[in-house]
Image (cartoon, rainbow, N blue to C red; front, side):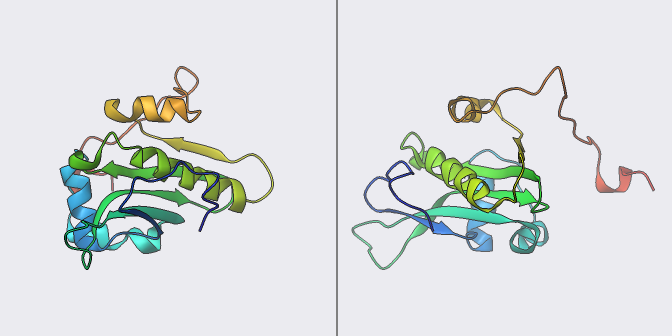
Length: 160
């Protein structure tokens, strides 16, 4: 996956994986970390609708046969120039251990090593708890040049 010398080290009993956590773990990570909950049908589209993703598992030393997904992130991309970081989440009990930094750095490393020649456009939507992490890793607010916008309606409210 990545050269461990370029990524911050993970605490003991944590493992970084390429890919996406199982659907139930994905849905739990989103909801438990404060992101908006999603339905199983929405979550099922993640593997085919993403360019790359990673997640971190924790293995309890008392129960070494089981591991739990505790952090994740993914990239939505056209594979050419546009790369959107999404689903950055760490379970509350595992926060403040550098897991989000490992996930973000691995996603950015993947873009650097796999995007085609030219300047990639890398963006994300930063909720208040993540802003310090993103700033530390080179992200800046896009306003006033551009401002992120979201549609604030239900699916049936989308224009026909």
